[in-house]
Image (tube, rainbow, N blue to C red):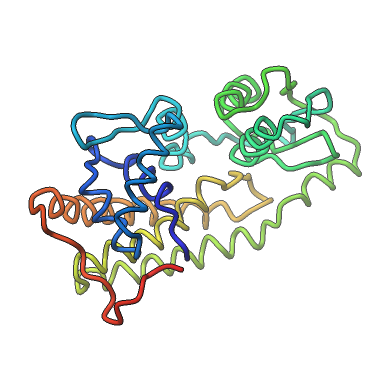
Length: 278
């Protein structure tokens, strides 16, 4: 897995207890074979884009734009609390009246719909089960926060014809989602049983790679109701990721403290001397 330094820096800032120093960013990125010059260039570009901002000499925090998205993404920890019983109804978003010429707006729109669990029922009509607390009003507000155009209608739908209802139910592969919950859960549980035997830098690198994929899986999870997915398996997966996340935070806090407290401290690279990413 190739690690993008800008993504790594933003991820570290999203979970940091405070500002991230350039020394800490350089040390963390070195774990993945990223050179110091690339890290410093990434810091400059992130600041220029408004995604990070100075928090003192040589230290950074998330900028307002990135902080808003970070707050939403962190909602995976309490996602199960946002789910309510499903009565068979649907939430829909119509994008038929929206422009597709603005590529940036189009990307934001597609990301917002994906993060909220919507799939295309028709070319300009997106749907998801209406099983979230607050229903259309809350989902509408979240979609707009994530970047959906203000002019896009977001509404509840009842009594779809049988053909469209069945088509909507088939938009997600529930068996595949359930199998992935179990597979990733078992992988995380296995890693945690051996984590205490690893050196801090090795543990930090491995837990980031595994955790990044697991949390992304939850962030983009559509939060489907039964019988569209195995809800018990998703809940078990979420619980394990929460435990894994706490373990990972402890490991990374320990590592970043080493970078901060010892200016010359640098993580050990692989024995071959080759970069960890390509």
